Image (cartoon, rainbow, N blue to C red; front, side, top):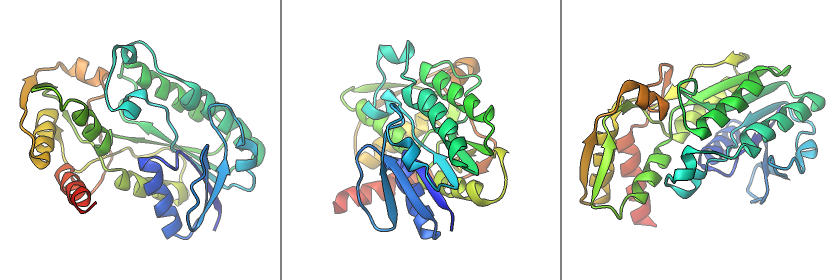
Length: 269
């Protein structure tokens, strides 16, 4: 089987992706600043933000799956005023550019890039950074695939957890279909090895849900009592914040199923 380099392989999506690739029998190499030895995985020490170790990490690689990103909102699980002003580009733009250039030198045969649904209408700085990185891939001379995904369940959970100190939550009434990282990982592996290239089918969760319902499901499964205050939001404002419904492939795991599975896992731990 061909050698696959995964960036972002230690994140939520990355761990699911690496697991799927190993299960399918692929040789997998993960680029990371902090190697975490595990069976069936090669570890390459490197950093997209600086370029350190990239040339060695790409040696002998047939397929790159670029799942790395730098989202301060996701990292801290909350939004701050600075997030409406700027977002770092060192990984999503500069790092992607380095990976593409060195990948071409290394003879990479397929560059699969993970992006976000609805970037054209989104106005947050992080969304603009993600779009700039995606555009680099689309202009590349490498054979490429761009796979856009809806927001992940774990990100919503983190954001709601960050609101737990508030007695009342103002929540937009907009509709979206968030998705589980395991479903996205399955779709990425399929796109990486089905022989296709270009803009691929985007992926979202199986259900179109209001953000209000999503918040109430979270509170119910966590056994918490908070007042959810529905906030009307125009379609334009919703799209600007990335609240859309994907029109491509649908995952199979629902939001409520994901919440229940995580609750069981936490109780066992």
